[in-house]
Amino acid sequence: MRETLEREDKWAVDSDFVLPTIDDLVRDAEVHTDTVELDSVYYDTRDYDLRAHGIVVRRRAGDDDTGWQVKLPTAHGRLELRWPLSDSPPQELKGLLTGATLGKELTNAATIRTQRQRRRLTTRGDLRYEVADDTVHASTGADLLAWREIEVELGPGVSAVPKKLRRRLRAAGAKPSTYPSKLAHATGLSAPPALPKAAGAIADYLSEQIDQIIIGDIDLRRGRDPIHDTRVAIRRLRSTLRVFDDVLHDVAPNFDSELKWFAGLLGDVRDSQVQQNRFAKAVDALPEDLVLGPVRSRIRSDLQAIELPARKAVDEAMQSTRYLDILAVLRRWRTNPPVDAELAGKTLRKHGRKAGRKAVQRLNQAFDGKDPALFHRARKAAKRARYAAELVAPLDPSVDQRRKQHKKVQSVLGDHQDAMVAIGTLRRLAGVAGTSVGENGFTYGLLYAREEGIAEDCRTAARTLNQS
Image (cartoon, rainbow, N blue to C red; front, side):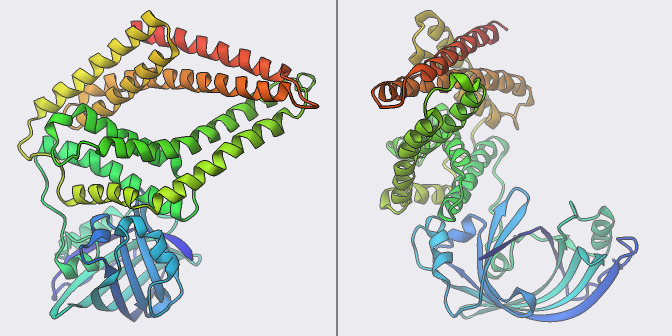
């Protein structure tokens, strides 16, 4: 499997469109012109589950694009994964998309033949821009469709389509395409109509988290490590369900607990990673004559003994019907967001303010009770208030100051929670080391005292923030 990052603009044009001059877009560029014939068979589930997540799967023959391709949306463009040409979708490809397809079979969604006239601008052999004039013929079952479009693809060192080119295309009659892909055009699946502002704010926020969860799912199946980002997306999703619960519908009573279940599995892996990095830095900061015994190896082996089974638990969960049921709900929300279109903006703002008041109340309770568990509770309330402010910000930019304040509190209390978890881990490690030949608890005691100091500093910082 190979991967590349694809960044392109698509433009709709009619049959009489004349491509404007582009040869002068880059000084001293070499211009290469050719024509290629591309045959592509696009695949999706019968319910277009991949299309709902902006994912494209195709089998292409022609030019240098021959083979199986999966296009995944990212913040910087589309990540394209490629496999050699074969008669049926490679098993690895299907495995990576198990979550996005909900385990359903891939079927032929469209066959598309493209005559492409390319103009490629290069400097010193490096691609700057490729402007493709595509004449397209598509078939979906018995339906036939033909159209023409312009694609502008950016080279690796280019950040955006030149304004000059955009102006020329518009002047020549081109319009930005309403379809994100040829498959969407062939199947008639354009973007859903925009919701009113308040409903759109909550739908967009949910969609952002779903994006990260789905890409996280694919990356986990690729053997990558998106655990932190995926866990944060689930936190944001759960927070939204809690803070805005009475303006949402189509949410099963147990859905939050199901999200919590999978987030907990990710958390077991992430917590072990955080502790390993934390202790490694702390031990390295000590004078070597204070590191008595195999402290580094003990910490590493004991925490890896927790992390490896935790990773296996995540892998097993991702193969389960229970996990796919979670993704099925998120898939449904793609096309049917769980929010009424007539939702009022003042209702969202009211819920955001309420979350902020609760965060302050929880922090005051923590200082009054002086129980570490109360600080952890206050941290979760600060996170919910921060995420609520993020959601409301498109409607009311003035909440950004509150968001920043909640983020500061969350960060300080997060450091406090990490210190409290570290204290518990060190107590356990010291107990084992104290009864093992060739080891003792001295260094663990130093680390323990360090973590207690960090926790106290965090409480002081949190009190200062609470008074500001």
